[in-house]
Image 1: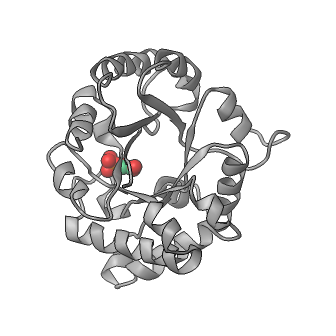
Image 2: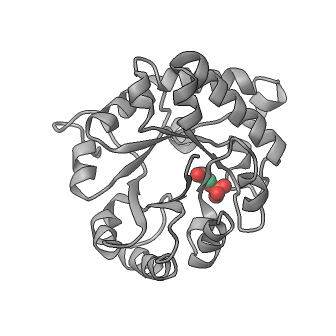
Image 3: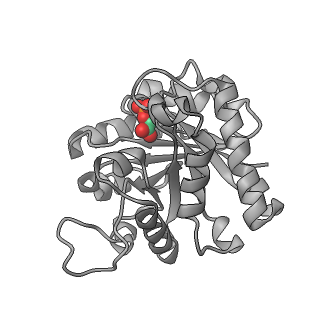
Length: 251
Ligand code: PGA
């Protein structure tokens, strides 16, 4: 059985004070939740303070990005070791906003992924097609390209620490969630791709999250799909009530 994992991607939102307020509400409410892995990904500046606030709780900390070099002249970047130093366990890699706004390529995603694994951070690798790609029936080509590009050069053993998030770009922040059938179809495709490349045992263990307009009122039907193992949540992760509603919808 794969453990459900719900991660909140806060994107570029919340000051340190606001982050701490949200986290206090969450950790109290989640103290008896044992069956779902809960991760929050605040902005870099809030990571360290939040890490202390969640100490001893069921919530784990993740960052939203990293750079693959360890240190040096890379103005504005942050390394995997620095995220570990701020008490992160997880890191998002290749979010569609990174790919589309900041022009991150598969090669970037692959290098970041390797850096995260080397530092023993658990990567959540995001993949997903844009609306025009879906309309042109290119969804599976895009997903194959994102998945194989991200995982190039990795071993079956590396895969045990990786989570994949399927996030159709047209569903992110739009309120237009993928239907459970649309999401399941792509999740099954990803699992098959992993089975073909790394073996069926690895594929069976791989956790694949769905992301894109997940809300308390649609999580139940999504999580009921056989290949959906959790959610990566944007907007609804910014308020305790809706994030808790999503987590509780998985219990
Ligand atoms: P959303 O964002 O839940 O606001 O659609 C999801 C994401 O970008 O990870």
